[in-house]
Length: 184
Image (cartoon, rainbow, N blue to C red; front, side, top):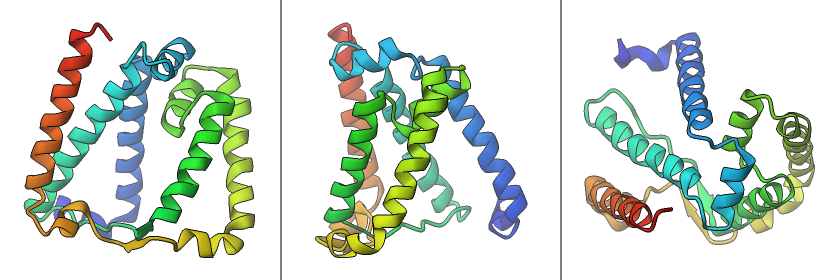
């Protein structure tokens, strides 16, 4: 069934929607849409949001590479650069500073009925996207700075992906242990 999923666009959309609903549900249940929890994260007093996001990273990394190993998925990395990373980080940072949500947590906040997320955040995302689309042609020079293409970290270091995934998972688990032992 999964082998030919890439040929079935409607099934992909339904599957993506279901996974998005599940992730959004887990974000909301974990408290990632609550102002106090997000503020606690920014003040380094409550690490709930980072725990949720890093858990998703670990599960995603392991899941994607297991599916890839079974021949059920292919990687399609997007090309990148230092310039893209800096511009994206600035956009992300401005949005987070102005409203206090990132794209993931804003979805959880909208889902739980936070009007600031719905009217301020969603409108802000649309306005920001429009501004970026308008400025995009003029940003081409900046976006190409430090070009590294569509290479993954394991490809860059010429190692088996599990040589990156397993140590990174270990570091994340140790980080979780440390923040839990600190009562954060």
